[in-house]
Length: 152
Image (cartoon, rainbow, N blue to C red):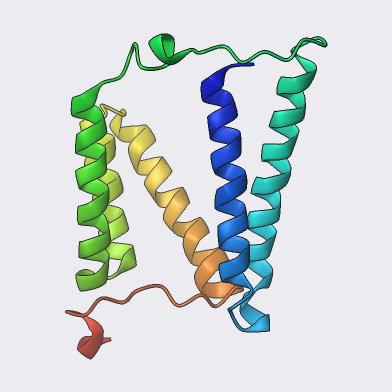
């Protein structure tokens, strides 16, 4: 069993537990979707843990794989994505979810050299799915943006 995989599973289970307790504070009507997602993540994490234990073939041992996990780490890509994500959240607050998501996805896909045809297709499909699921089906209020709020 790899130490990195075990750390991810433990993190995910703690993450699910934390957000489960936070979700219980929401109104009853708003709990169903978050509870579904949290339960799905927890079940998948437990299944991964079971798979890892079974793959040990009776001898549980944790192998330190830190040398191989970080071998191909690309700091420039990581920090570009990280800073871009922070800017996304700030811009989402100011401008709104949909315009910010469109620009963010386009810039990230351009930065990561995704072919234009695939990028456009991905952006359109994701925005349509997000609109259909969150805005129409679940009535989740997505940020309109402080700068545009008075105009919408």
